[in-house]
Length: 335
Image (cartoon, rainbow, N blue to C red; front, side):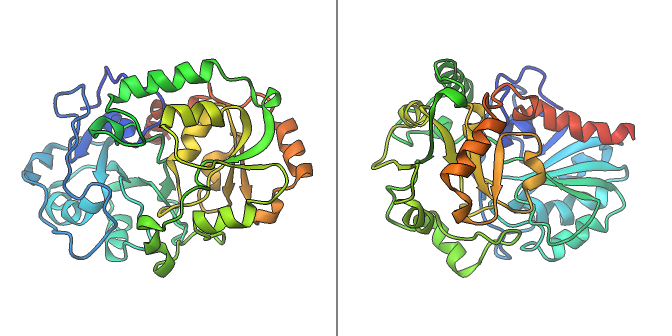
């Protein structure tokens, strides 16, 4: 059942899951609190992942018409094999919790979902547009409120998703609107030297975008550009939010996946966000997000123009809440 007392309003992929009617796996089993299940969490899709991860698939025989079902993408093969045969009614599918490009890197799983008459619509994180189907749409990755709830990271002690959202909102209240901030672009990743997991994309390029440069390469290209500020070293997340909040613009390039937590946290903190143009552009319609065709699009003249378009940011926009996206899904049932 969807949680009625979810304490986190801002868009968060686990928050979207919490508001769905069913979750696989269910990380809100007590009906209120996030409790992580580590099995293939965040995993890129692979044929090595088992297809029998769901312990009681027959429990889905009573899936009601129009329910929304959230499935961890790495569990999708299990869902197709174990659950779909039990389902008799039509439902909306949501997949997330992976940087996999969807549907291009799924292959057979994508065809099985799109060809299933009981799947009314499929919302997915990191939609790459490789299949032009009216049956599939993107959904945001949202802000990362889960990693820090599981332990020390980003030079911050563990805190609950609710505490993290409260910290973000507290910082936001003290920030000026974009028109009164330093009118430059902030790169919070420029200090990094290693490739990390993103090395994977050097050999498996992202689909759905033409600007596939790694963040390391992007930083090297932009470091000396006029009106670009590069963070020189690591900061605790809350401190980084405060310092970055002095600037109007945040650059949020792709990582291992097309979408990025940075984009959504920057929007919630009132920034104008510069992203590579991609198959996700429609997610940002009406928000202060600038899809770039080329890094050379970042010029003083362009920054002035974009700042005049979005002088106030959009931190109060309903599209920055998980509930907005769930309501959008449910609106399909009324059509």
